[in-house]
Image (cartoon, rainbow, N blue to C red):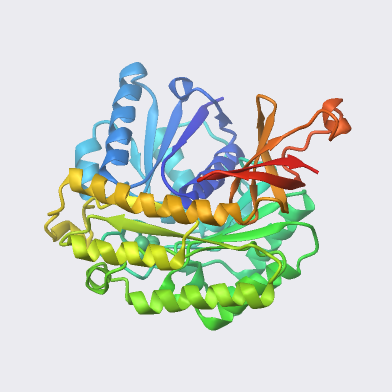
Length: 447
Ligand code: SF4
């Protein structure tokens, strides 16, 4: 039997796509292997957000071919359809494959790779126009699941490869999303993350359900589970959505709202289509929403910021700093601008040096450290639900509903079931009393 290995780079959407590919390959009776060098088929599910990540992929492909020349290699994901990548890798890659062409995957495997595979009989996966999103994934985790509700993007932010790589927005029918989540909850999944490049513009093709309506429907499903979602675009964050996400009981008290830059001119050059004022207004509404609808809960707000976008001056960077201070983010995922082929920003002058980008990120990170630590201190003395993710060296590690990392001590006399080893709490939600707040994490004890 032929074996496969999928190497995934990049965001949760790519990881979720890989789960669907794995399930599909196993329907064709390919077997997974944990050793990339032993696989007959290796799929690189790529990310094109940064040149460094791209270079790592080239290096790994070269090594693989050197170690086992007969291995078949497929390149999919964000860089797989780029002409320059295809030219550069044409001798090493057997198939460049767009995730949107998933319905043709089986034929490609058969015809191009000459594998001995068993044709799949699942009608749901046959046909030219079937979205790969309707494939049942092979979930890589037993209690946390990523459920894509849409793919693609219509926004064309000037630095971003996603609309080029994934195409325009396609939403999944609401009944398909709800059926997948219902099954997951039945199996005991505790954390469901709804995924999409811009979930705020979700619109079910079957019944025109909006994202806020979908959130309400998911919230109404029976069971004890948490709902999270990424990612949101500030231009599509409606009042109706803010009301839903700050009031629904199963929706966690974390909002990830990428600002990308604080300066209006930089935002315009990024083609983000909102201003600093609009963004700050949204954060204000979200904070007020939580305070009105869930006054007893602590909430968190996280964001993404790019430093060193073409033409960004030091005073424009100060606008990003100012937004960070006003919003008091709990976490920011920084990106140093990296020009990507096929995007509008590729043709802009990348005039902020690498050293300066590092300096700008460090500068903003110092602001983040302060707000994150200040926010973390609010947890001390309180008892919070924590989903336990792993155990190491006598501690459990998990996350709160607000996505705070928590290190949990297990006092000898506190949890007799644990000490006797009769109960495994990985993947369960536990009450944890927070005793200490660090800059990036919390420390607590099971109660
Ligand atoms: S909203 Fe902008 S940054 Fe996000 S995926 Fe779409 S184009 Fe990329």
